[in-house]
Length: 141
Image 1: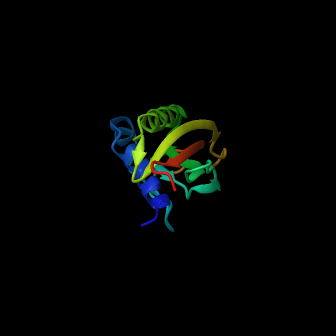
Image 2 (image 1 turned 120 degrees about the vertical axis):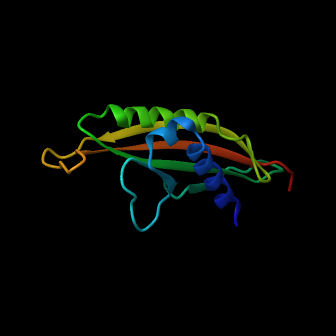
Image 3 (image 1 turned 90 degrees about the vertical axis):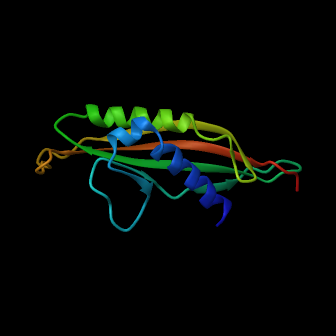
């Protein structure tokens, strides 16, 4: 397992173990070949850049979450967005040999369902949440 997998696992766990997210989502996990039924929170694969300093390895990670709920109004989606944001704010500070220095929300986009997109459970409301994480090794190189 790489440290990227450890970081992803810690983020998925922070979301899945949040009472707010767990109460609102049927599924919290990584992207897979099949999407789960809504409501869900998917952790997309991390995008990674170097953020090393003089004596320590570091990385800047871009995290994207895909969220979806079904219903007649967007309010359940807004509640899930808020719960996911609160869960990530309470993330662990250390994962393996890495310190999470910052987690900054970059933005949230919502997508209204198409006018004729009704299903048996109502239209599908979707959102994407983007974050920037900066991590640094706890031990010098």
